[in-house]
Picture 1 (cartoon, rainbow, N blue to C red):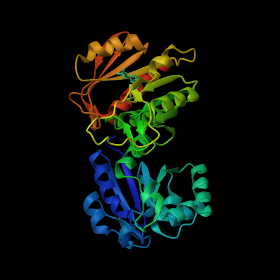
Picture 2: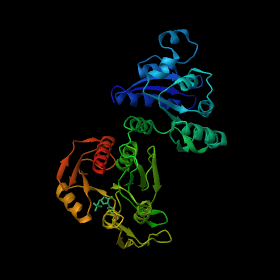
Picture 3: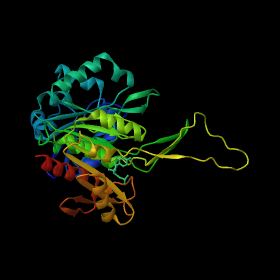
Picture 4: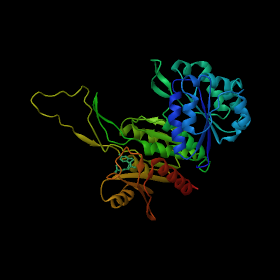
Length: 394
Ligand code: C5P
């Protein structure tokens, strides 16, 4: 990864300030970054900011003699390993789709022979406008990778999809781009991730601390190896990794149904922290009694999605479970592997790495024994596991 070079085009939008953090993250990942700032972008961040953060000259004009003498625009367009546009405005997308080259950024985009990753950010109506929809479809057909914008409150006061994804999510897409291959092409892999919520009444639910990060990273890593990935996700606020089909669910029973509906699959990686129990759901909000008597919740066991899948006639060839334990990790994981008829159990000690963190220390329990990995960022655990899955399915 160390030698990778990014050409970052910063378009004109309020989200341009997030490009500053993105530059920091790109460099932290060991890649170099050279910035092109559009005229619009320069209204939101200064060339000085980008130059200081990237420690590279910033290019702004097609007709800057000094710029052209140092590095011509054609060379600039060819020298990077990946061109990233963040934020990609409606205007930039439209000009790219039409092949217009009326500025340094648009000329580079027309002249480049390198892959392009566009990260749009714009007002929700602009994003949803028929013209933008058309341009996005055209650009995707042309081979441009376009991330979906985030949904949320916008700087203009409106609400909807159009926000620039977090710089961390853009980094995931950049990493995915560089680790892309097709060793899993033609395979369908099912991944469950996140917690489940079990409602108690219309306003309350039982949940757990699962963040979904590890499962989402695994889904993304498998897609990057060319697999068709169905990600059945419990309630989490995480961006869908590029190339992954996501099915959102709330409860364990909904997750079980979604897993069933997604079959057949070549492999299943069950990362979700499924609630073991559910309660009867009160139709009305449970009220305090006034005399201090607490309500009684009657629990019913939820279906074990992993065990059911592993015992079913539609069992994927490779079934992988996770085991988060606070004690006797290997012993419990080994027993779980047998009990649930999983091929592998990925055991992680949640007494060290509390759920929700950025790293994970895991042990892979298989028929051949236990393989312990050093503590790694969740993305690295995902990449390694995806590579091992590819090997097993080969
Ligand atoms: O029994 P435990 O919850 O520790 O097992 C963890 C493994 O089983 C994980 O892979 C989890 O996704 C899966 N599981 C499941 N359905 C359940 C409970 C756990 O698929 N109801």
